[in-house]
Length: 204
View 1 (cartoon, rainbow, N blue to C red):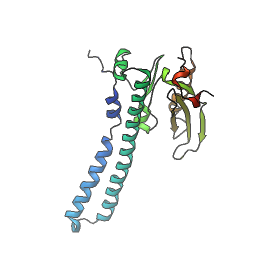
View 2 (tube, rainbow, N blue to C red):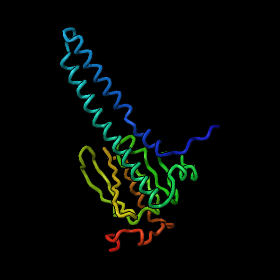
View 3 (cartoon, rainbow, N blue to C red):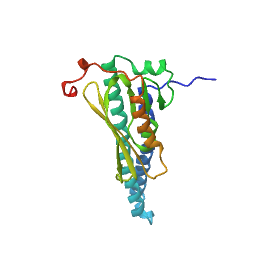
């Protein structure tokens, strides 16, 4: 049986690559091109044009947002590598992490909710975290029925917001990610950071 490959930074980009969105944009552009070439032969050319415009616009917005999430996740990983002195790809190989949802004493990883629901990419090593805020719960957040957020302050003084939301009351797995993260951080084995590595504004 062939062993699964461990995840890497490139895995994040591949998982969040807007392939569907590119297909939507391509379909919309082809539709507009066909209308332009054979304008007088379509009875519903106006409707097709509206649908094509929607595909291009919707695909572009969603695609850009996916690339933004992926690039931000990689940038944050680069910060962790610099501050804690490790290589992410080597760490994943060391712990044999092959899935986008994984927990160890040192690592908390959740990529799957970003792929399906465009939520936060959570890839954090425990010794990179200085403190974690309390969970904030909010009803009626935009298109969602309920949302949860937790703010992570890292040892370089920056803050990272982990956000999850659900469309209906039966989608409890998003809340579970936030609860799991809070429990993971507070469990025995939390690595205390030294004040030398924390900015002055974090000492108070």
